[in-house]
Image 1 (cartoon, helix red, strand yellow):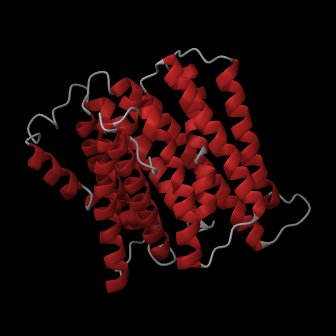
Image 2 (cartoon, helix red, strand yellow):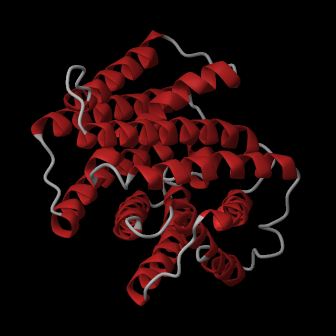
Image 3 (cartoon, rainbow, N blue to C red):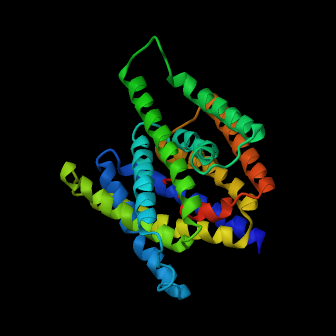
Length: 307
């Protein structure tokens, strides 16, 4: 164990995922969401394969005992990724990032529903606090007596990012089952392969020929996403989940900086206040899961911020 190295890997992974999201957001005005999912996934595959080959794990790291489990993890994760990318078309990057933090809160509920985990009042209270933070972020958007195109667009974005959070939480729960028999490297690889394949189904629905600049961003997003995924996996190898998981929330800081520099996005105090409440709730849940000894660390390496 090397906690300092684990934290460095985690923060580096979060920073790269934030850059990747910004690169995707930059092309969404002209490139369909399904096409962005393809590039994000397809160009991650060689990075993962090279990494496994360099470690000598190419033959053993891709063996599976539950192929249908990998398939359904891929379907759920791809849906989460697509919804999250689509949301970037309608909302600022920091807002999508902050609302996306609801996924760990929902995981607590889904783990109780589908895995039979005992969830007592402490964690339920933390989930409730987090949902209050979500409502604080959403409240300015939920105008009941006014209707205009910008407000309708924002509400659509909110629905998309919340949908993404739901599917990310479902993916997390599914992975908690999958890690009982499967290696993390196989979970990551087959998710990426499934996402690449499923995204091709959107080809008849309006893919475009990207410009050189757009193509560079799309390919870069895939390569950076692959490197970030490896760093994320390594972070849990060098430090306990309870140590590195809270640094997931550094994503908000990176999103704020990137959103301001790249997209001229300036978040309001309401959004920041709600985000801090969600982060507080998430950290409380991580601490409590450490106390309960839940296998959070095994599940996390197979999950990206997009699914």
